[in-house]
Length: 418
Image (cartoon, rainbow, N blue to C red):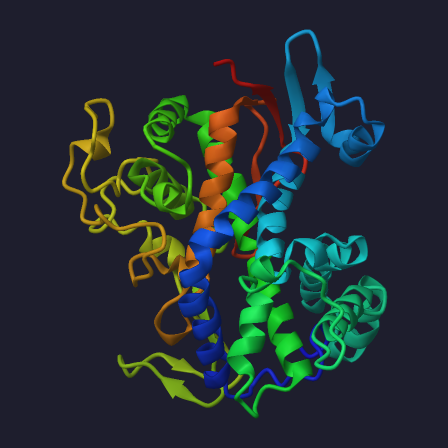
């Protein structure tokens, strides 16, 4: 952290930080989320056009932007697309708008830095485990091009947040709903928050938000590709909605249950709730000790495969969490069984579903993340037929306790006929 952040003490008291995050995201952000959703929808449609629908355009630039991601078969109407960039951009573009506004997040250099900072940090984190500490600074400089992405982010945000002459030209309405503006407004009365410290906090939140949502979306979509019976169920649920605004998208129990089951069986990390000991600590059993500097964490994979909470835990059962099943489910085992977790939702944080963290440091932005994922899946289900290009290909790989999607996975898309 001391290499990939700017003048931040990783061991400082974090209470002030989480109070700010809770107010800006959980309180103010949730009050605005319905009004924000149409802007997210417009950004998502732009992203889909760039990746999927550009083949219908005569604009050469659109095809250039997609590049090798497209493999077009005009005889059948199917378009083969590299899935990871699509999922990364669908989630990242919507979250970027929420964080910084449509104009700032779309600035080419700034957008490049948003994506590069995450990848630089992940690569450097892996390298740190292989090189001795005394060469860490050299490794950081080589891997990150002397921290170029972090420098671009910091300088551009400092310019945007300049109190005398802010260089942040956004529509007032959408600007008032961005996370950055809400953090600025929520921190005005606090002497703790200097401009640079606030920028560092925003960059830190972005790092947390820039990887897990798109990877979850990727695995959710792969589950849809291999489970056509759920595609039909969810499409029926989508078609039954009067409109697809925030209220209706948030009240689709079959979609929500499918997504939660996908996360349960495809967690980004098999461990969760990591905590670093700052002083010696002994757990209540009296036998488990954690020394200063060591990391304690919860075994998320084992927790979410606990048969007492998740009967038949190794099976994918997409209706496992639906409280009131609105249709006959004789072909779905979880629709006939008494499920202990039935009625819980994707955004519920608990000791039995620790994906979002727990306690005072539980993720305050989980509702925004869930909305982005639901919007993406609804749009893809509503507008396209899709299938895996190679059903026998490997779809994920492991790095330590993390499972990651392959960049090479391709999915064929075709506009749905109505």
